[in-house]
Length: 469
Image (cartoon, rainbow, N blue to C red):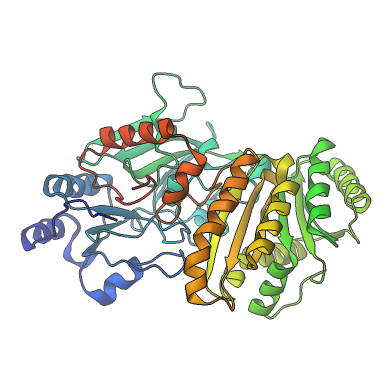
């Protein structure tokens, strides 16, 4: 990686930054910078020169103007829960933390919209809505710590995406700051808006490379009154994947549909020191349905049970109360952390059309056998999104470094052949950018470069991310 010609942060600039946000929110000591030197992406570490914690859009505007004028690289950061290296300051410079922009500014029940700052924790927002009988369905595994601004920058999804969609389906307005400090206000509490190019949607999933998002206008929904959670064990991953596609073929849309292979459940049991139902099955499907009419839910649950049993499920467990439902979902949410604790790993966020899920599961198994390498898969199978974890275990460092790129490239090539792409919700960031040409054409990538140059001509915003070198 050839570093652009960025400048260091000198004392004059440091003094200007302190005047903007206050000295206590300008971090320069290595101990204080350590939390900002990494995210949840494997074991990568890059220290910034300075970490700033502004509190307003106006402060961020002033900061970016200084950085743009002085060619200082700026890496925006939410909670640091990302899995693609998107918040790593690979060229040093400035970390711009959004953690203090943490106000819920408005919950408008007349228009069913909310306005929040980018630093609001996802679960905090959901909990406030729940007090009013309202619902924000986007449900990332890290919801107890991740920030809504980060969700927008990565276009986060989660288990409920199968029925309710992902972040982009709820964002109707943004306030953002451009690289040169200009403040951009986009959209609003509008369900319809075709006045020019949709710049709001352009910034969603842009991983902080085009602008710094500071405020978000989100669509909200009435909370469904009832839900049912089911768990079905299968003696093969193929049967589990095929049963899932059959549920949709019968015109039933679960609010969540998760695929978990045996090794993932075992890892969660070991990590949490708890026993989970059917953990000896080769694969599990975790399903949830929700709605306002219990009779309809009972009918759907019965049909799902029939489909699973006909598809080879050994049983169908129904979590009949909230405590048991929470127990199952806690298990699912801990799987990622548990799998990653086994050994060094590489997680790939593959996604294909849902009907091709059985083929994806088969291809992952074939590649694992071909390279004699351990893979553990789980994820949001209802929308074709499987997290394939490649585990180092007993592989030598030399072999790991030599063969891992080939394993990943072959996996992504097969995913694209199945009509899929290389990231469903984790973004491209630092670690996936070299594989982007597998998924996108030269024309697409060149257009993205041109868009980047228009928004950020000096290349100061989250440099080293998303676009291939």
